[in-house]
Length: 146
Image (cartoon, rainbow, N blue to C red):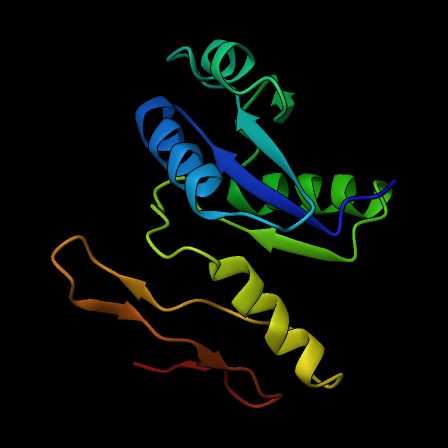
């Protein structure tokens, strides 16, 4: 059966960040049918080995060269679509998730209005200062809120 959400994380030599990201993801993500895919851009810091050992349920796409952030995200998105996922979540490897049920809240926005195509989270710096609070995408100029 296809997962409801496929989470795509791009990583390049981010072993420590990636481990924190996945630990907080799994701790604070409950009751949502998810699959995580990490697209590794030819890391040399043991990231892939760490993933295979500590997170055996994570699907790893291992590139033989650093293809760049955009291409790697597109690889993950193609994988998610091939799995039949209804939603794709792009998650940076330096994100630490602090709120329980955060993903259910994001999904509720999609379910509340069938005109919604993209949803984003409020992002805070480690000191609590606001980094990002969403954006508006128009045909003219996209811009951030917050």
